[in-house]
Length: 352
Image (cartoon, rainbow, N blue to C red):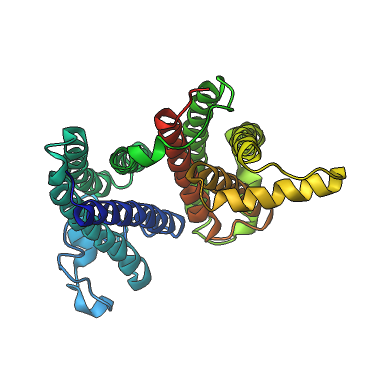
């Protein structure tokens, strides 16, 4: 029998680790959008120091030549970019500690469900590999392929953590009634997840092109960047509408199922069409408080709308610096929400 307090500790640590990974994705997006990726041209130290300098006078007079000999030409110390990248690394170290604690706390499942323990240990090993990959990204002088692999691995790590936590709560998820959801739901959800990954891949290509454009403009004159956008940007933008309507259908299926189940247990009063709509909206809010699947469906739609709005701001508002990392974060959160919905649906009670 699993101790309740120990199980709660595992879930809290797992959730905290997931939030930390998403936070480092946000910080990584800020690093890339601001051009701070080479703010620390070496790894694991930063300009040869464990705590980076705050002024150029704290560096050797010939540090330009030193880093040029290492393959990093035109290295210029910028305290803002240096500390932005250094913060990114500190958050990464924090994640390593959290993952270690999560793996240690998962040992309570060795007798009841070894898969949870093995998942947590796998995440720990992947985090170690992710740290090495981070150093390889710096050593490659920020090659786009290395950056993309670094981001996709972070997405996979989050997916494993979500699965481990969901599996530890499968008894609660099995109580969710999804018998009213169409049998096509699982297939459409998997297609939606593939569409999200495809959208992320296209977004990566767009970011690579934008990085090149930003470098040409010296990371200023953002209002003129749009003139040089590649065709993939417009495909990426149009594809967001397909993703929106596909996920709206999924969310609507979850809402309809929850509403039908609620009506079967608490008959809604008759009345005019307007009163029935209001009753169903009220039921949606009430059900969302108790139905984790409906909560995630509503969250999913909010994330997609936020991602689209951030994309519109990139396109129409002169490419504001904060919009790019927010857009990237939303894409990762969307995939995470879809993955959790898929796991919950698979565990749920689908018997009529």
